[in-house]
Length: 132
Image 1 (cartoon, helix red, strand yellow):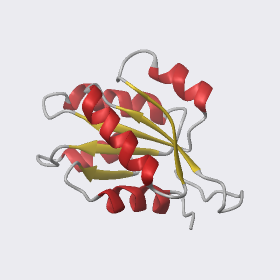
Image 2 (tube, rainbow, N blue to C red; image 1 turned 90 degrees about the vertical axis):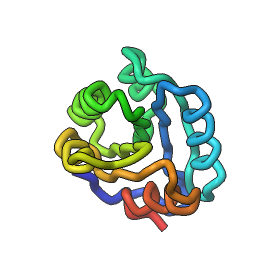
Image 3 (cartoon, rainbow, N blue to C red; image 1 turned 60 degrees about the horizontal axis):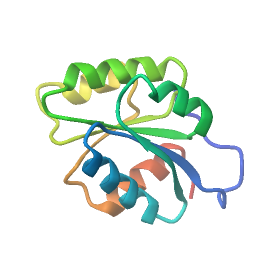
Image 4 (cartoon, rainbow, N blue to C red; image 1 turned 120 degrees about the vertical axis):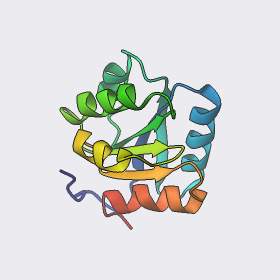
């Protein structure tokens, strides 16, 4: 469940980027960081360190990248994160074969594809928590 933020709209939305491919991770972090109102507080691989990094960086939203061949691992990560941090976005190369539905069932609040425009990715994150 995502709830609206009670703080001022001037405060940047804190984003943690999780993706195993360092180039994809860096690209997502760069694209997100360019959007006014969004601040990247960390970027990491999808490994056992993710929960600790989430706990120390206190993101408002976690963006999880999903490689085409890693659907089950990505969904398991979403389920684990969703238990403690409700705002999650899945980024996938392509969304097919029920991946969007499975992602939402695992806790993703939004699903976007890597071919989305930088503005579209940023706006999805802003809309997710209803900040202007």
